[in-house]
Length: 204
Image (cartoon, rainbow, N blue to C red; front, side):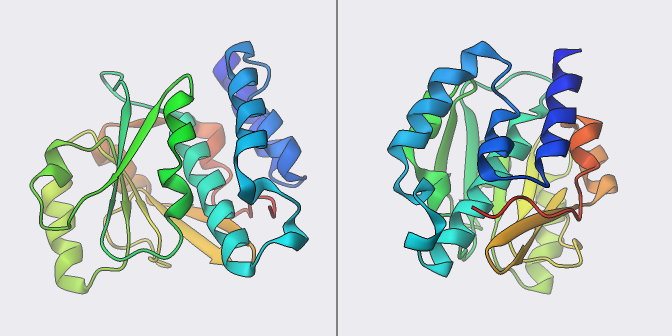
């Protein structure tokens, strides 16, 4: 029930400010200290007018990606959640902030070469950058049968085999969902979060 309540609050916050978006998690008392530290520690959460367009996009992407991960559940809970960034990316910088390791569900981020065997054996989440058509097929085959949540940074049609595909427009980020890819992954994501697909996340 609490998870459903949180997801409904997250859906409502998609039309409001960043503060409301983050507060969708505050009814879980364990997260309050983490959120307060996050607000104080991340320079990118300063007033939007003081940041460059690139910084705004980077922090919008970070917010969406961490939000998706927070509502994902694996068959066996990883501790920490291993987030692998692979292929050339533009907006993944915020995912490497060490404060993510202090979350109640810690996220450990590392960059992994696309051709590394660790991509399908040592990752719980894959943040996928720019790849070509041949690499798309290779990626789909490699993650098949593994409980890996995949998120593409640059796949507007959501055809690279990733479950989630970011849609970046100006200073905002939204996402599409490939339901077939998500079902194959074996990772569960709360259905209320899936309803946010194609809806813009709040500008940061």
